[in-house]
Length: 435
Figure 1 (cartoon, helix red, strand yellow):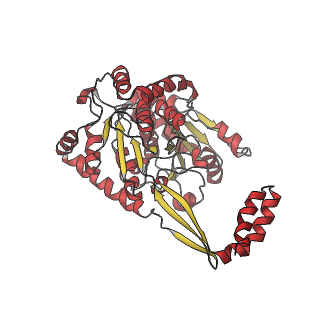
Figure 2 (tube, rainbow, N blue to C red):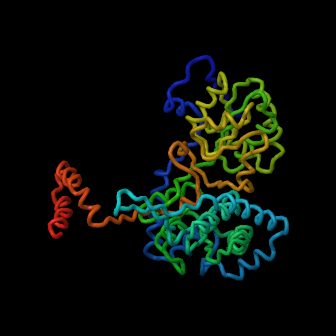
Figure 3 (cartoon, rainbow, N blue to C red):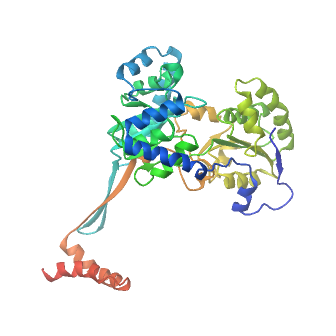
């Protein structure tokens, strides 16, 4: 369990080569396209009937109408356990507090007298938010998707989550309760690639959306890739992952528990410890088997920790560890070292960073106020997690008067000539000739 990779004693390779040496789950989206493409096309052309047949075949649920009735949402909230409702309300409050500070305001720049460019930030009109319900019904993902969309000003929000046979063909009651708490009344009991197709093409009472966000399995990801362009997407999410950069000050029991908590998500989840302390590595490896045996999902966790996507990486020092975690660009990165805050400030690539012994990833999954929909598979090198900004579009509004255009006409003429686009220059000259 948890193979070792020893990078001590020699110069570390370049970033790309180093990333190739590190354990990581591989997701072959192309391998499922042959399944996903005809499924999405079926929804496109046959609509609700195709959704009903696909759902019956794949989920074992035959819903005549996959729209969740309002009374089911109200009932789920009324029957929600008080402790769970309080937890959801606290999570919503904290996520709203953090995301409210992300809202951008319009800015007007006066380029020259009589010439301005205004950048307006306008929300996407309609979004479809996907909430997984496979190995775990991620009701917290309702909060993480809905809150930033609402703060951005999205006027039309729909949620889709897989139907559950144990719940009468409806999504998980916790998912429905979270939707009800957030005022979301348009919810669909449909999962997988077919849910993305419903959002993209429209089916039944669901009108097409402009954008789809939310995590999902490889079939969901493949459908998002297939429809990208027709709809916007947040990312192509792969298996979840955590990297922990730790030194000899870290508590090995904490480190072991944090690796296991991430492995609990999925047999493909990645859990990587990067440390300059062989004693810490040994202690963590000694503690992991007993902690795994004590968990509910030990088989799933064991598969993840035994896989090629997980391991312990030994480095010479924390500086070398920083190079390793930057090359890895983890979805979640924990810093458990001396001066953890200072070390965290030096990280360049991570979806979210959790600083110190008292900021585990589990906190961010639920109640830190941060968003847990984050880039995976090394995409944190170039992409961000879900935020209010994900649902906003920047539009430049250009307004020049006659004098301001005349002052720059010569430059436009020169640039248009260099690009052999004379009609561009003519469109400016014709305005000057009529003065």
